[in-house]
Image (cartoon, rainbow over all chains, first blue to last red; front, side, top):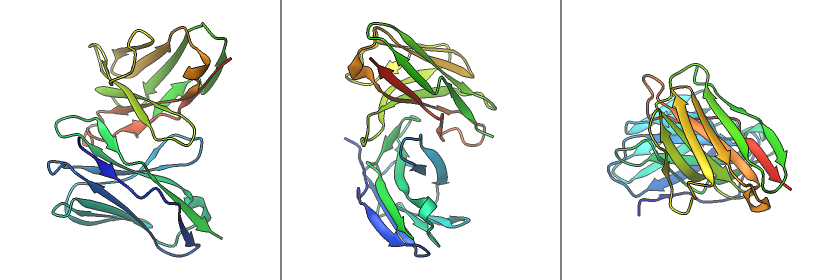
Length: 111
Length: 117
């Protein structure tokens, strides 16, 4: 059974701090990794994708991938109350486009 | 780019009726579309995967005769909930993949909230 694991939280950080969200996956053959943000009552929206080991930055967001450790993370710098949401880690099943989702980490940014 | 729409956004129906939900990729051709269901405070649950012109592949435990999926074109998939019952009340979300250069990325529609009375 291929798995993606996340700490469900809630993770509480003060406004302006760095929020660090973590995800581990079991399938060593996985090649691509996605972070989605889901506000309560809304559908997921894509934040970032990452394919290669190392860091990838997009504005206040940085995705980090370590395939050897089977670990992908999302850093949110200068966290804002509007970042309060559930963050989903998604990993396509090898050979398909079907995602395995983590349970999501609920982030609360305190004003 | 990569916009996915769903219609309707919200529907209320009586028990025993059928409801059709449309999912459209507005600016790309979606080779694969996915249908999810999400109950309050729970994770997304994949119901089925559909490819244009072929039968949908349903996840274990999802009744294919109750949740009819048609992927008629590269931009349109429909989910019909047949003989709906109150336990079918949920948030139904589609996603589409196939955008050139990002073929493994799923782009989600805004979702359809179904309430069955």
